[in-house]
Amino acid sequence: MTPPLCVTTLPPQEAYDYEWYRDRLTDRSLLEYSIAIRIFRAPLLAVPVGGRRRGGSYSVSHPRYAVAVREILEGRPGFPHLRLVSRSHPDRCDMVEWGDTAPRWDDAALGRFYGYEDAGMFAFVAEPVERRPKNQVEGVGGPLGQRCPSL
Image (cartoon, helix red, strand yellow):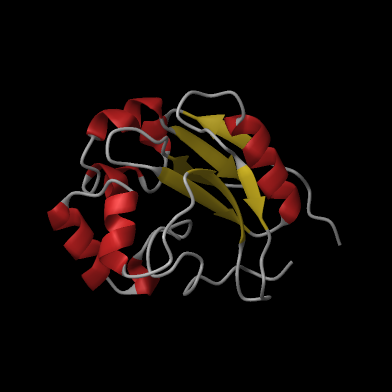
């Protein structure tokens, strides 16, 4: 069954994970250029590249949502090289990625890639996966450790 398409945008401060990024990004000015994307009821943040931040991602539970998110981000400053990444396993999410391709090795390298402060990066590495924001695939090797609801 194809899910209904309910994707809207909001100011960045309305994203459920706004404070999470605010507490970890080296360049907090990127939050001004971020966008909260709401799929159904949950607005989550898409943070642009800039400064130390070289890439980003937004995970979704269905390919239709990935296409909708890509269309929202297309042409916006800070979201270059948009691409869709399909799930390779039923327990993983589809994603929209932008910027450079994330390194697939240790968490510290990923933290630097995503522009996290050293203190924020160490907090991220120490934080249990289940306490991270639902769209947080930035770390722990990308989409590993995140489950999407079955549709």
